[in-house]
Image 1 (cartoon, rainbow, N blue to C red):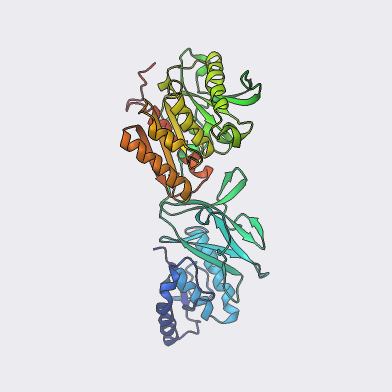
Image 2: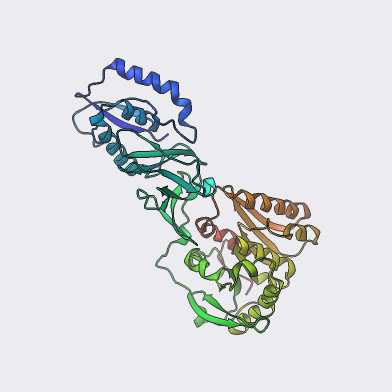
Length: 433
């Protein structure tokens, strides 16, 4: 447990009996502390407003939990309450950071002196701030709320202050999403994905093109990633197609991930094709005309412009949410084109995709699927499809994360599908060319 260290100085006015009394109160209410919400004012032990620098005025050290800190402020004289809060905030920021994490509990903290209405919304409550209000610590500017999460959870959230949705001003960690940035909570055992960072390593190139089809008479943006060394060689490369292409580059950091995995020899060099939808909700919801255009026109166009391997085992398609649904549909109907499918947080509760897989024979494809425990409808429907894949003997990989419906999750796990589709041997040598 992360414990708060207070200094009890020679000037403190609290007697041993008052501390024992405070501890008695603490023990009587400790069962409340691990619930998602604290009482309005939770009593615990008092302390002095010293900082945490270890100065010579300290006569002894005591270790207290967050709950005990709250009670110490509650019982402190009015003139000492804010100083105790200030000291704790400095200490918390220098240890776990804010939100403050103690074992499996995350404490969301907010400072404001104008008596606002404060709540939190995020992956963990369906982004609904109703019933997620903070407790105000009387006599201070501190508002707080506690939740229990898994030790490896990573979640997006925002504060809602007087009806306005804002980033957590005390947390510099953010995650970009389709509706702008969110604050990010990472519990103590969560491992940040190193592959999304940008390093001083060889980088691939991205070329922008407009592709016009004859099936629908539409023009759409297509971005092509070619790996380092592509222009200097004559080799042919595997290819992966991404739905929501622009977001996969800007929010999913796909270029950084590809550069890193290639440089680390975790996958062979690949060409990536990032395709933007024109009408996302329409095209990614069982639009068979869109699928036929994609397979019969866009893929052959890419093959004619770039040095791609054209066998289905060397081609993959991937997407998130509705894009994951569409990727699963493409692979089911066109295994001769896409023998690898990356389906992230797929919205397969829409339509009859599960039934289509249930009545299908087993195809010679690889299917990667994942979902978060904080996106229940997607997790449950995905698990239903996975059960069919397992029972029927499909080649598949299924992973579950303590995360929500977020680019923070999808960008962190892109490597899982790529290394599943095309793993390099331990030597780093790709013998398939």
